Image (cartoon, rainbow over all chains, first blue to last red; front, top):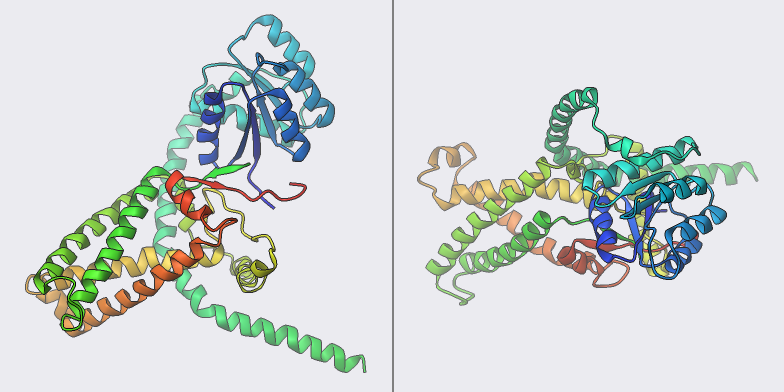
Length: 199
Length: 210
């Protein structure tokens, strides 16, 4: 089973879908896109998504209707509204529908990643209360400070593992036939013993 | 259709320069080794081409290395330090290649940018990219100018030893390329992995109920 978090982006502007795709696939997410509400609902009926992003203004079915239908079918799926029409009235409507976030275009790659992580965390924590997603991407000073050390530690660890990798690989390659033969002997021996005991 | 961005641009550029370079090195290498048997070009031309392409491939390797050292995608080359998990997944993959693939069973490995190789690929690429390829570069460099590197050549046992190692690795790569291309055809379609190495995106198999 594919363990990558599944993200659906619903927007009649292909560029938006491509932006999400570009940013999130690099981070290990599996991104699907839909250009309209009906297409999105069709996608939703085929598989479970971990988070859905939808535009508001789309021909045929608007983002509110899409959100409503998704919430009826999969109430646990976080839906984030991504819009160029960030009016107070729209935000209030979105809140009523129980969205996990309401963000205004244009979005930077950091914002895309931030709101996705926030929505996924909310899903994991089972939080239902809708909140504005922008707060998630505000950098905090203490986080920035610790992230420098984390980066240094990460680079050191990465390099050490990279240097060790071929030797660990060689050990595995050499031991693979022996482990295989050992497993065959173990399971074969168990089968023989079981047969002997059963008569 | 779900797609994953598995092969970033620097990796794709490196891969295709490397592939072209390796084929050219094998062809010129064969010409140098079997000078009496093959007449594709003169010995001098073959040596010159082999040297120049060798330096291009060495430089290209550092593009690959610097890219991976500067990104967390280097995890794709990290060793699995849990032998139990490693062997379980490896034997699952061997069963797939040995039997499951012929019955249309799904591939047990589901790639993502941080774990794009199955356990067998991971083991092979760790050894090839981080040990055998650098070893071939070193032996190639020593043979390029034996006089300049006379001390190092002597330390390693003389020209014959260095040359033997270089040729043995060359034979390994000549076979590796065929196996690599064959395994490249084992995606969900025969051309899926090749397309992914041009576009960067790999189409993911949809599983029922996923």
